[in-house]
Length: 281
Length: 320
Picture (cartoon, rainbow over the protein chains, first blue to last red):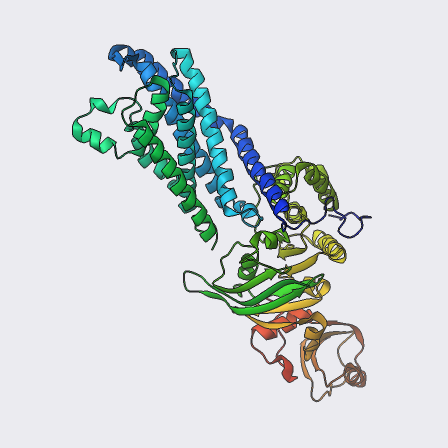
């Protein structure tokens, strides 16, 4: 290596040093920093599209073919809708949950494992903004996959939307909740086994038992009571209510649970980052 | 102004290891400062605390007057860190790594592009800007980390063994580069295993051992404390008569080589006179080890540097 000689005046690097001291500087720096994390996360999703976008598309297509066309035809109607129309919101929500969670857990743990999380830790970005950036990345992937699955669903059935705002609010809040959940998992994970444990042994069973494929009205009373302890039920039900106008649980209560989960999980994530759990010694 | 100020900085890890036992350290603005110590002495812990990668147990840290407790964002914006281990995303391109890092410091993309071009040209990496970082050589990876640390034009640059594992040509070029950015006003703190590097580049030095600072002064002052030096003299042939040199400790590894310890009260003239009297002809002479290396070994081995008493020759390699 031979370093080039420079004719620049001392400190004459383009832009020069700018301390983050004034409120305006700080706001601008935070805005740029947040956008950088989101763009980086989005680029990652698109760069490894074979891992991020293709598998949920294949899974959703198989669900629609098997449960919708092959088995659904024999099940008949549920709540006045075909079985395919009934499970479509659930399947969309399932892909949103899985991908929002999966994006944050793999991206943040990957950054810890490769040590490039240190790029963010040494930067002036506050902890809450780092959490927000990763969560935004998770939400982006969740919504992108949710949109793709919705388009696939339209190849198999007609989707009626009863309350558009409810659909949007439910999918957004759910995506945020699980992106935050993925962040917590990634913070505590020490190896790759620990980032697959929660999705495999906790998230998947909870999603399947959260009313994606059936109404809990079909279950015995004790099983209904158990199902109501599953937060995913409230998310799926609120989302389905937006499409079909019918829900297994009170929609207002569902939104209260989702909002509370977002607030508690976000505060928890910021606290973990401030404390340095899993990231700083 | 002080670029860095540490007061009573302590760190005890969860496993009970006390890595820092209340260190005080000041680095003046514009300085080129060496932080040395053997493995496990606490150098990386101290750097980790300053750069927010390690939580301190107690004490204070200020960077250009900004406390990391009350003005963390301002303190971090003054600081650039080149860590010991590779810590960039090895699947990303050089340009992506630099532009992202600039973004994390709030630098808008157009300015970041200009700076990227400037620093990559300075570090001879511009042609590699679209290369995936994983495929770079070891020296290029080190230079990339330096470019990344400089992209936000920090006032204080901390380098943790930046030349470890790079060849001598790259190392010398890096020295030139670091000298130049220091002359341009960037304060530099350097840890290194190459003590020649510290002696050549740095104006001030602190030596940490077992979590405490055992030496902290100007490089020249510290080196003056070295009371004894060992010289290796190569002779043209074996001595014709016996050598009489009372007061000097000597060893002869072979017939044409002499190792002589010289303390401050003694002088080389006496040695040359005695050698001439013994029929010896000195063809070359060198220090047995680097002066800083010698001092370093004595300090960390707990020898009495200031006593002026001759000691056994130090090991050729410092285990910094």
